Every structure is written in C-alpha cells, then in structure tokens.
Image 1 (cartoon, helix red, strand yellow):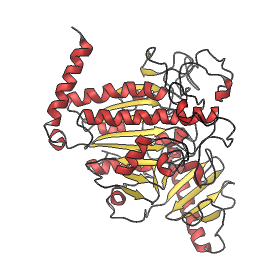
Image 2 (cartoon, rainbow, N blue to C red; image 1 turned 60 degrees about the horizontal axis):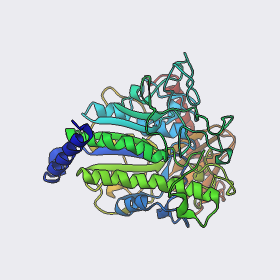
Image 3 (cartoon, rainbow, N blue to C red; image 1 turned 180 degrees about the vertical axis):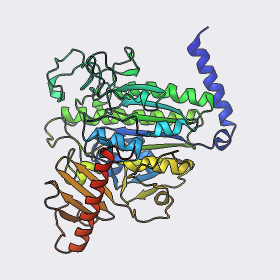
Image 4 (cartoon, rainbow, N blue to C red; image 1 turned 135 degrees about the vertical axis):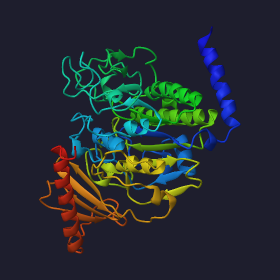
Length: 472
C-alpha cells in the first residue's frame, strides 16, 4: 500500500467532513499556536512600516486580528522570555536568569502540561533553550556526556511531539557551519557540522530533511502534527519557535533576490525573515485547508529586541523609534512585534496600545478555556488579556516588572522606572510622550517614583522567595 497517498486521502476526507460541520460542533476548545521569532526587532515587520522588509503574511494577520503595538518580551534575551510564555511567571522565580542559564524545573507547570489535562495534543517545534536535550553526547551549548544538571527537554515538560534544538542554528542549512561573515560561529570550522542537533525525543536525533531554509524545515514538522490532530478531531497546542533571525543569519534560493538592490548583508537578514513569513503563510493555509482557521488562535511575537548595532554586518534589525537593543531593558530591547489572529474570538481588527507581555500568555489562555490549575498557588506575574482584547479595559492596571543583570525596570501604564546600576539610582520616563526614554521625570513626579520603587522592591523580594523554593 502507498501509505503517503492513503494518508493524504484520509486527510482530504477529514477536511471535507469538517467543511460540512460547524467548527464549534467539532470542539469547543480552540486550537492554540504560539509562534515566536528570535531577535526580531519591533521595527522588523511590514505592519510597523519597515522601508524594505516584506512580511505579507504577518501583515495580513495584523490587519485581520489584534495588532499589539505595546507588547513586551519578559526579558531582553531569549531563554527567560521563552520560560515566561510557558509558565506565566517571571523566569527569575525559577532560575532562568539569562540565555544558557537555568532550565525549566519539573516543579513548574507549563502550558503544555496544563492543556494535556484537558485533552490537547501538544507539540514543540524549533528552538527550546530551556534545558539540554541529551546527556549522552556533546550537543549545542550545554549538552555534555554524563551531565544531567541542565537536562530538561520539551518532552519532559508536557510536549508529546517534538522537533527541537537546545539553542541556535544557522537559518539556512542549519546543520552546517557557514562562512564567518554570517557571524556568531565561534571556533567552528565553516563547512563542518554546526554542533547543534534537532531532537524528536530521548536519544532520537533527527538526520533527515535538514537542508535549506530552517523555518521551512521546522514547518515541515508542524504540518503533520496539525493534520494528525485534525484527523483525530483533537484540539492542539503547538509551540513554534523559529530561529530566524538569530545569528548566524543567512538565506538562499529566492529570498535574497527579493532584496537585490540592497547590500549582501541586508539581503541575508531580510531574506531570512521573509522566508520565515512564508512559513507563517503556509501555516495559515494549512489551517484553512483543514477547516481549522476560525477556532484556532495564532499568537506571534519575538523573544527580545534586535541583536547588535552595526548596519554594516548581519545585525540589521530595527528597534523602531525605541532606544536600546537586545540585552537592554530600555524599550528597544524588550518591546517586540506581536499579533493575535483568532477569527472566532476576534471578529474585528484592532490595534491595542496598552502594555502587554509574554507572561500574559498562560493566564490568558487558561482564562479563555475557563480552567484553573489544580493545586497551583504559585504567584504569577502575567494577567489575562481578555478584558483588554474585548475592549472592556483601557488600562493594564497591573505593573510589568523586569530584571536583567545590573538592570531593573517597571512599566506601570504609561510610565517606566529604569535603573542600570542595580537600583542605586532610577530614572522615570513617560512612554507615551518620550518613546526614546530621553527625559527623566523624577523631579516632576517624586511620589510616583517612590511608589514604583517600593513596588519593584517588593516584587524582587517575592522572586527571591520563589527562587528559594518557597512556592513549591
């Protein structure tokens, strides 16, 4: 029997049946997709007015759904932000302080674990960066033979289906070390294996279909996961964490030709993002083909601001009008592009200009599903965004705290408290009138500043209690 053809016929039959049946009759539970890019700045999308970059599929999502113009990653680097997406808790509470630091602890409840209890199929695809994948061989940044101290792969954190790397890979031919002009190749030798593998499970290293555009390689694994769930009539939770446009950045095929009039480095950087955007389009088309569009929510954001600050090399990313870039708690390091498309829940396009955060994913999704984690009394730093999404709430009314190395900050509605010296001194900015955070208002609003410092100090004390294990 020709199994691929047979399987295609079954999928087609399922699609025809679902097309004849209202989505709400198939399942009341929405499918949930969390898409995230790596080091894509606030300005690195067409819908924020980039002069060159082509992102037609993200632009279409923004024009049909919710465009979040004031959306924060929980941190200015990748691992802590990823942790916040899955737990709704600031990653300092469980030791994920920066990239390649800490891991997802078994005591933490992830979205995947919570949703599995309610019948969801769960899948992780792309960059994990919340623990190592193997204890048997050298892999990526921290995987070492016999070292289990960092081991915490996605399949031990609630994900049934995985196609995951520990950390970065080149964005074209991800298993092969590129030339040094792609940047961030360390002491690797161009042309040899990059040293980071894709894994499907314990001791299950992937060796096939690993050439070409990395975003396409990832989506090649997402599509069968969605089709299988559609055939089973099962709601699904898919986490799709692209490597694009993290260094080493490069592209190939048709994508560089989109930017033929620009520099070689611009062609590689912009082409890499456009290639990722193509896969967003492929994802949306697959949902439509399976009759799943209406009752599927696609959340999209970046994990932090753009890398570097040198337009003469591959660090071409744009923070838009904001100061700071990756690793900075100024807004350019943590304010990122973000979109929600969910036709069944968001019937009209809206632009939301209210502070929101990756820590809000967990409480928002559980609020939508009307579920409460059993036995969980952990302090959570995110809030449900549903009142804001519905238009019932015009202010956040819950501050967003940040800490990274010697920096700390607090966003409270339109105002931001910021310190670059471990809290020895603070500045106060009005983020509505001062996007670049250039004018310190401490002298004009001393009582507000004192109040915000007090709130931040209390929050930091709470994270210390969590880190000591008191939540567990």
